[in-house]
Length: 230
Image 1: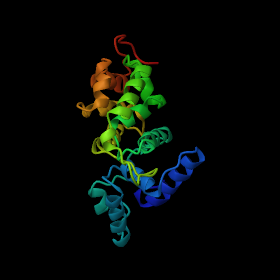
Image 2 (image 1 turned 135 degrees about the vertical axis):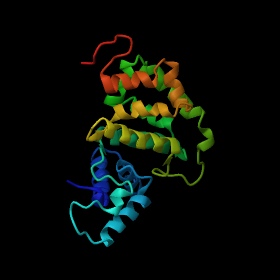
Image 3 (image 1 turned 180 degrees about the horizontal axis):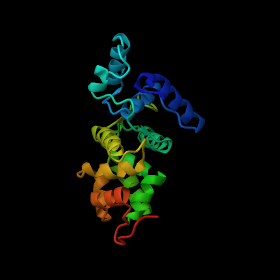
Image 4 (image 1 turned 45 degrees about the vertical axis):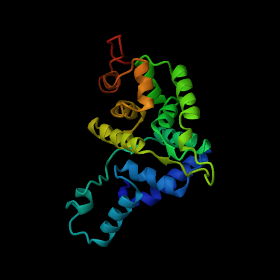
């Protein structure tokens, strides 16, 4: 099984997989995605941990390394293939509009087409068509202040701080659930931590709450019906 020391190889695999599905990302974007999958702030942090592991001699296999003690978890849940495509879709929405940042609105718009996330939203009574229209209108008209008019090119949009917090929260939630993969389900539970964001306000406007999402994902309870999900 690969661990964080294989991060560069994993990033190349992600790029190749996405390219086979007509989704192009830069090398730096693939490295940042792998860093997020291991629950660290960015690629530079993960690269420093890898360098420290390589230069420090190993004595016993069972002895935890200092990098693991510092928060690197080799067996942390990894992003599912579907969620990786969802994240790339979100980045693509921002790139296409020359937005400097990929925001939670781009992310939630991408999650509408994620099978796991959309199932959560439908089970909580969300009208996905109305949500999609509202988010698209906001992205087109409400984010003009982050448009980069000159010099922008595909792959330059960077995840916002809120976007990164949700990614990290999803990894933690998947760990708590004992999952091997992070999926759109986890994203829908933790996104509500950003309760003041326009994306979450749109979920609230359709009467979906954090409790609704957690009830469905963690307990299989569909909103209003009180029955277990199939």
